[in-house]
Image 1: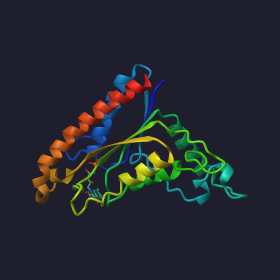
Image 2 (image 1 turned 180 degrees about the vertical axis):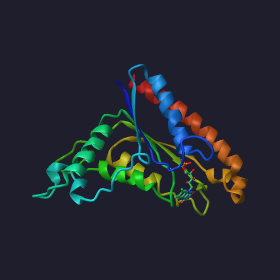
Image 3 (image 1 turned 30 degrees about the vertical axis):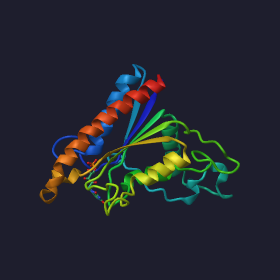
Length: 223
Ligand SMILES: Cc1cc2nc3c(=O)[nH]c(=O)nc-3n(C[C@H](O)[C@H](O)[C@H](O)COP(=O)(O)O)c2cc1C
């Protein structure tokens, strides 16, 4: 039965005034995907803000057990949590990631998740351990930015939230990474930025449409 792993990492609320743009768009994707994927389709929603993960504090846990240094004795609790996160990810036919831009980078809650699941020898091939179990599956990244980072503008290269996800999920895990972007969100809340409100509205509408269309495309691929 098809399964979706849905991650959210915005510290904004899911609904109401000031609602998180990434949360509302991931919700559209998840709802449409589940409706289109059939009665048996299931979703695991991991809210990395409501239920934050602890930092990864042992470098040995970056490696598959067979690649850890001799005598390595990771904390059993940290090892068990990592095993649960890996199991959750490996069970997913589709991965959905809400990834707002915070200080030009990933939310720290999402970075901790990435630190736990990017494991050479388990999720990423390593010499002698060539398996790439997530290869060919799709990761949908929904990113929301307060400003704009359009090609040809001075800040075009300032968004460092999406590139690490593309490298880890795409290059390292071999997943097909699809990105849905919505910009200028702060124009709705900050008077001084209100000139961007039309852009924000247009991006929001386009992102919901893209999310719904992609959900149907991916659900059909898993049927
Ligand atoms: C801690 C924090 C840092 C932020 N840093 C940036 C930033 O570097 N660049 C930017 O364009 N917007 C920044 N913003 C604005 C958010 O990207 C914007 O509000 C976005 O819509 C957040 O995603 P959400 O709507 O899903 O919560 C920041 C917001 C917060 C709360």
